[in-house]
Every structure is written in structure tokens, then in C-alpha cells.
Length: 209
Image (cartoon, rainbow, N blue to C red; front, side):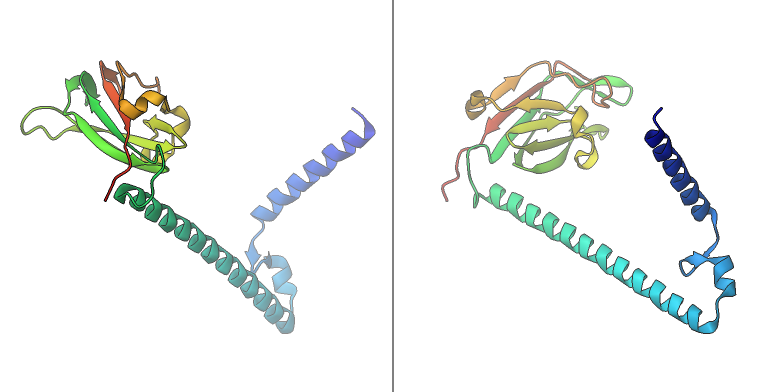
């Protein structure tokens, strides 16, 4: 190991140790308690003022970040709503997804389920419940869908948190006439187990109002 590299390792280790020690040191208004006990009234007052100012700045920064995130969520929701209403349109902006046939695992067994069809807009994520077929049957399995940039992803997890492991349906020209994907199977880590499921994807035409 070269001398420069050895020095860099020592500096890194020292920094880590210092960080760990500081994390374990009792603090008061952002300074070690031992130092606080040695301070006079004037220094303590200045320390408290500086600490409260840092806290105020951090709080305002967090509030601003939350406000920006909320504004983005609101803007996204408005855009999705406008697509559903037909106020925004481009090819692939809105698609219809239909799930039918076969069986899906509900509880511990594979069971027939009620067909379901829904619309989903570009950049939208939504959940659909696959209810067990039969009168009075209330048990179901839930599946989340995400649609973005002409890719429909099934089984993305709650709120789209597991999109990387989802089942992707890539755009095809056949979507314009409804493309039927037969015997759809999900990943080994998925909670959705299916047998003979058919998923149909269709691009919705422009709505003339």
C-alpha cells in the first residue's frame, strides 16, 4: 500500500471514529454537555440563539420541501384527471386494461376470480382488487399497476414501490386494437400467483366531446 493511500485510510478511520464518538457524546443546544457546563451566561445565550436559528432554518427547509412535493403531487393528479376527462390527449395517454380468465391465488388456494376492466392514464399508479368469483364471496387479492412512457407494469407493489420487480407490458402497435397477453405469470417474489390469466391492453382513442 502506498504512503498516500495509507494516510488517506488513517484520515478516513479517524473521521469515522470522531463521528461515532460525537454521536455518543451528550449534547445540549448542539454542543457537548461538558463544554456547556463550562460556558458563562453570555456564551450560553449566544449558543442557544445560534441553535434555535439553525433549527428554524432546518424547519423552514423541510416545510419548503414538503410544500414542493405536495405541489408536484397535486399537479400530477390534476394532469391524470384531465387525461381521464379527455382534456389532454395523445396516442397512449389513456389505456384500458382488462384482466380475465384463469385462476389467481386468493388465500391459500387458486380460485376463479371476477373479471375486471379499468382505465389508467400515463404516469398513473392504481390498485385493483381481484375478487373471488361467486355470490357473497368477499375475499380478494390486490394488484398494483403503474403506467408510464408506454410501459404498463403490473404488480408494482403499494404505491409503485416495487416497480423494478413488476411484470412489464411494453407498448406494441397492436395495443391500438387491444392486445391479449395469455397465461400471464408474475415473478417468483410476487404475491400474485396466477394460472391461465389473460391481460388485455388497449389504447383509448381520442374522445370527441
